Image (cartoon, rainbow, N blue to C red; front, side, top):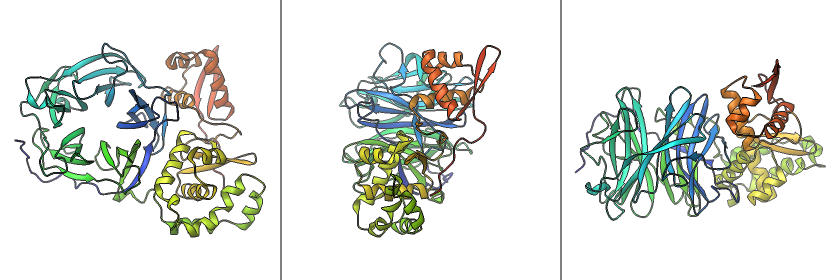
Length: 496
């Protein structure tokens, strides 16, 4: 029997009104082309850093992406992170990451739950994780975890490390959550009161409880998020505790999205922000594909939202100048400026103008910054008119920035530097280079090549591209080349 200790809540559960796609599957042929899920998000070095599970439909791995605002994410790698160690290569999933030493990170992760175990590794750069060790295995003498364990979430406070993890019984079902503590994050002691939460008949978590994610509030209260399933669909809940052992009754926090949306079939894998209130990243399933989404609480909906009303879109598109249309008519920009006017009047009726389609377009631009209008239309399958409408809404709400490139227009996620030169697009390698230069201002080109494991010729070319665009500054001191991110803004937004 699970004991629930009731006490005044530290904060009321957030009420979410805005949901948007944060990270979608990789492109065709990518290691994560079939779906992404199980995020863990850490604010470090001025960046939001996300490690997540991806799959190509056959195998899984852990990916790494970064973001300046938690909304617009860029993959750092085109492959999964590397994790060395006996029994762990190629089978890792469900990461939980904390800082390690002064500049690095440490990760706990697992295999599939059935027969699974929990591993631990460290890194200096978030990419190459070596010396993976198995730090916890299932105790076959304990019925609730006899079938296997996994899906850890780890916190650290002055008393040491706390881990909540999932265990399944001998049948591989009835997933429950247990607690373990450690002084060093390596050697763990399981709580004698385990499990702290079991499935309860008749509840929305009657068939199993998975993917715990914990935070500690400023008053010392533990908040534990999880997804529960009734055997048909999963939802996200949370509960609170003063000691990490006895918990308040679970409350449902995030239900399924509307039918046909990215989270219309399943929601799970919660990754709350550090203070439990600002944002919630989670996995959503539309019946075909898993994606990572961001839910924003009601009190933050004054920020730009990907969900907008047809009236707002109409107000914006009606303001397009006829003079501007005349100027665009001879170029691709004509499509972008003109077709939005009649579309505004059809917005209420056209099912292709819903926020989910807009989210797909937005996600494509984030993963392909600097792509052209025609290429976006081809990749997303949107019609000419529908694409124009959604692009106008995304620009108006501050999610996308258009930039002229000769007679064409490129589109960039808000917050991504817009190159001053024509024909520049940011690759995953560019993101890695910029991140490392930001982290270590003045790093030499030779040092950067070693850190990123790049050939000098490859790095030199990409440095030249970024420097020529005004993104970075190259300073030669003696016989060494030092790299800095440009202090002044590079590029500018293009007026509508």
